[in-house]
Length: 266
Length: 280
Image 1: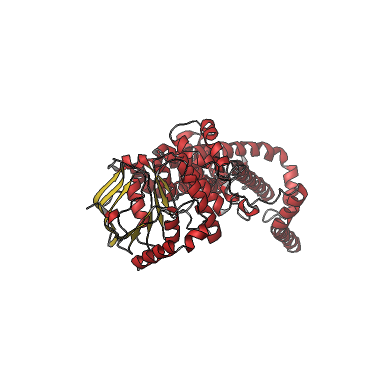
Image 2: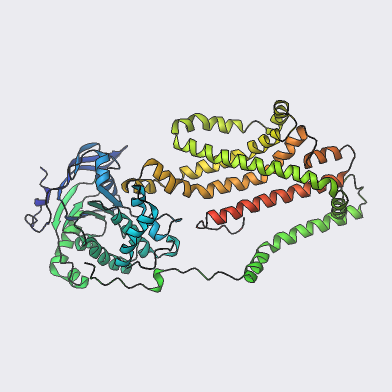
């Protein structure tokens, strides 16, 4: 049964926007030698919805993203990303934002962000002029010609996210995007991310070990267990993105959901 | 959406590097950096001079530094043209080694089966002392510049290939994965990630090679030649012109240092983003 999203006690998630096949996982399992990373993962994400995946560190969350992205095949089960089942086709539909910023130190911020366009054969000058407006819009104006080494962690993460956005894929896979940042920068970046994601409808899969982050940034939160990773809980979040963050995180609903998620993780 | 005010940027968002130091400051910091090395060299030279003079060591056994300098002046007419011959062998041989070394490293990196077939042979080839090969190469290629170029290139080639290959393979898998999700082809990954990322490794191979190059040229000249610093040394030996041999060694050292400096300069220009080591 792939109808995992309606399995939780909060009733069927009714506020998921979008339509059509988003990401369907059926019985996905993966092992690395003796270690079983994932076991029987089922879930179904409608197109253009925003899903958070939380779970303890080392619970196979990154493996799950790599499988969805088409960077690796599961040992068991099926993966369907907007109709694509072959790894190569999934790769064409997904952009992955890695945990570390992975900016190329020899390229300037702008030239890092344009790399997906260059990979597709767009000329460098054309790629640059197409990407430049995004820098202005996302608070990176005047940082175009700065090398990563001279940027702070938060700024590097923004450039890294912008690079993922420029790839213009329908599915964005975010792997602990703010894991390496301090909590203040992290909060700023979460707000920034919400604004940036609001622009174009996309299917977003956000992996994090921070329950609060998952609840704030996604409509539905899938809770994975410790290794071997299994889906142990599905929670409907969908807090209004306009409300001030402090108001949300202190609301009884939020606190209750957080409690449920933490309890499910164990 | 775009109505959202751009996030405020703070001072900490941009870690501005310190302003470029003035020439005077840089010279002073350089002299501080090398002060101890210079002091040691001067101390050794002074000790050398004092011991040779005090013990009355004959010049043909061990000339003092001042005797070597004096010889450098009187034998300049011999040493100057010889230097150009050797310099030419060193530079051309080094360029050949760099082109071939970078080319082979790239080829072996991109074609796994070729790498697996050739890497052991490459390592094995290094166990053959080049000095043994030198006379054979002279028999094969004659007394001209060709065998010298081959020997210089053979000696310089290996550190460039091995360092370069290691650099190309050391690229983090996460970068490769990231590039694949951004629609990169194998060639795109090589061009945009692996090769630029391996440049510092290629340069460290080239720096090692730069110090070997003049040794290769001298080996080549010893095996059969009628010109060059190696030939001058060989001709000076039976005549016990020890000062001249030392003068030739001094010039060879300068050639190596200049080549090393050129490689470092090129690296500074081509790899400005690389973290600088404290000293070369």
